Image (cartoon, rainbow, N blue to C red; front, side, top):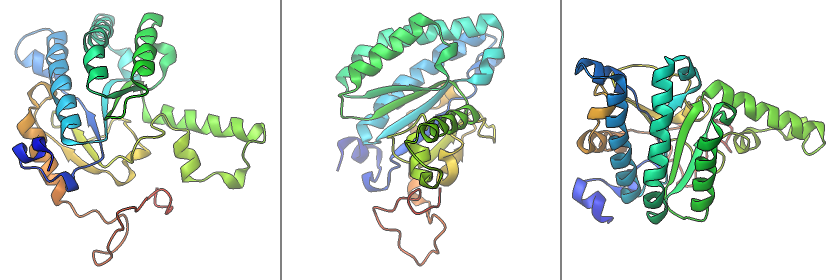
Length: 261
């Protein structure tokens, strides 16, 4: 058994392959402490470092973190500027550790709104870690589920226009290959912190058969114990993918290929 799983009492055979987290509550956490909102975002980065390293250590294959939504561009300019500065700092600070920990780094979302220097940092780290074989760390930045789906549709339309595919060729597998998350395992587990009960335009296609967890603690207070508790809860869920409780789901079952996604 993986030594980290053993230490934390986790069953490695019942862990999700792909976890998506909406890291909510940084600003409100700071406001409750009468501190600037960016203080909360700084604290949130510490949780990113801890949860990312722990996820890789216990054998999770992909971790997608919702860092900045497409709608967040409408926030006060000072906060947006501060968040972009924090992003620059995080990539520069963590790039060496991400590479040395064998993590594969990826950013999903609308890159057209990002500054050129941030794009350079992202592309350089993606290229640097592309040959790694460990966990995928996927950061949703300037991201929205509606936008991702529209981008996928446009890619497919372009393929049809040049005769690369025909209308009857379009299926779930083709569609998923055009999503920002192409190549990642199916999303198994969704976590949202800070007590809000909505998905906020996050991984809308991928959420179809994910197990959902809504954690009351804000992201800066989301510690290892809370994460392990949710992972244990996940291991107790009965996932049927539309089948009956009596039907045994094959280990190689793929909901998309079976037309369930």
